[in-house]
Length: 286
Image (tube, rainbow, N blue to C red; front, side, top):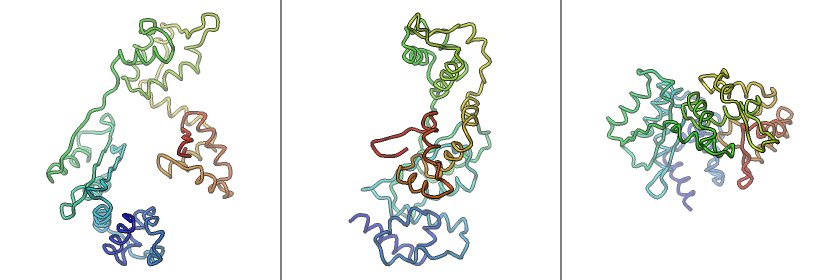
């Protein structure tokens, strides 16, 4: 019933401009799947969209789908790559004072990848000038003692026995959990850290670990690991990324029916084995 109300309100608000909304947000057509009167959604849109028109359409859409009874949360990561136009669109959606909306926006960016004149800072200032409440959170890495506990748990040794190792990993990763894991896996694969059957525990040479040339930027590990994948697996990851953070098994099966993507499932299985994807069986998503 609520979905029908949203359908009717969107039709009332957009009228003959509904095709423009679907052009901006292709998935929006699913809202109208039961509406026989919206066949014109699939008509070709000839006119070009201006930036103001784009902002207005997003504002209207958000005002319809969000309410106190159904608040909307939007999370966008890697805003350090966003340009002025992208941030302007987000600002328009959040600062539309003419309509009552219930939107909770979370944006993430890497402060080590931006300069002082980056558009993200003026974006935040503009939100505050519109009296939109903002909260800034700095997410730092783990403390050295936390990394020590993490390594201790991963290698099943006492914290005091891996303190030198964890200290070296902390210095190279600055406590970033993802980087710690990737670096630890890299050391294991290169047998710098190995499991001793005789001693029945993980062993390593602290001096060798400390002297190992480990990239300062551990993102290099991820890049190296990804570029080492077969071309088909890399292409499969690109295809899967087009569907967001998850891609359903049904979608994969449908794509595999096309000659262009017939090897997609096998390639995605390879990506899962390498740790670039996680298979969630309960929701049948990858």
